[in-house]
Amino acid sequence: MKCKLLVAEDELIERKVLCKTLQKYLGDLISLYEAKNGREAMELFAREAPQVAVLDIEMPGFTGLEVARKIRETDKNCAILFLTGFDKFDYARQAISVRAMEYLLKPYNEQELVFAVEEAIRQVSVQLPARPLQAPVPEEPVRPEEDGDMRTSIIRAEIGSFIDAHYREDISMQDAAAALRYSDAYFCKLFKQCFKVNFSAYLNEYRVNRARQLMLDPRLNMKDIGAAVGYSDANYFTRVFKRLTGQTPSEYRMAAAEKAVQRIKRI
Image 1: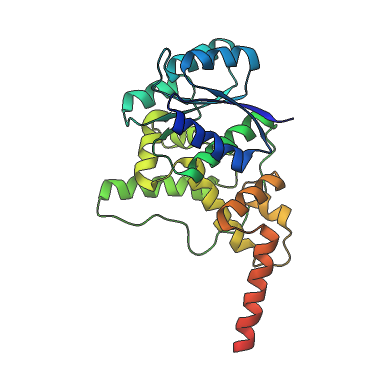
Image 2: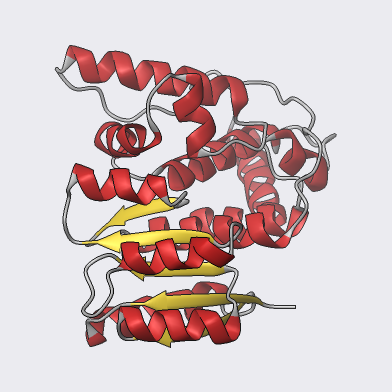
């Protein structure tokens, strides 16, 4: 059964781009419902009961925050994601107060959006499994470029250490914030400042890079590799891997093996 997804955005062009992007990447997973304002979003939610809602914060009639509060009166489990063109801390704080899963600033990165929505679909659609097997850590951990800001570098190192230690587990932005003793709202803003993408997008890229390292060992099968880097669902692992690399895990491993053979022949 497809996941019901509500998109509420008052700007026509923005709404069409948003819906086309979601249909392009996630069309096989979702039934999409469009609302052009907050009132229409409330009516659609009452009638269709979507499991995921992507809401623009600034809308006429009712704001996205007001829609989210109305949703929470009857549905505690709906995954809510906010879009906004305003980088206001108070908006982020209010988003967390209604247990929003993600808070994306416009103009958002297409990949960032898709990962956030796909993670929302996964969380509302499946029973979360037990912890996966541990994978060996490659020599070069993923890190963004260094800058001269000592405070930012220290915070980035703290966050990176948490991800190093827990990427194999089913972790969320809220888990990381709690572990590092930040409020959810502040951590959301801080993470974006440090890593230039949101938590879901960064974590997926991190895990895929770990998986690429494991694929060099021919004794490991793809299902075990996916589980070892935090993907208990093999289909979800394949989908994420292909989106980031342009190849399925099997295609990537085959290409890597062929390159290795060519290098040996040249020696």
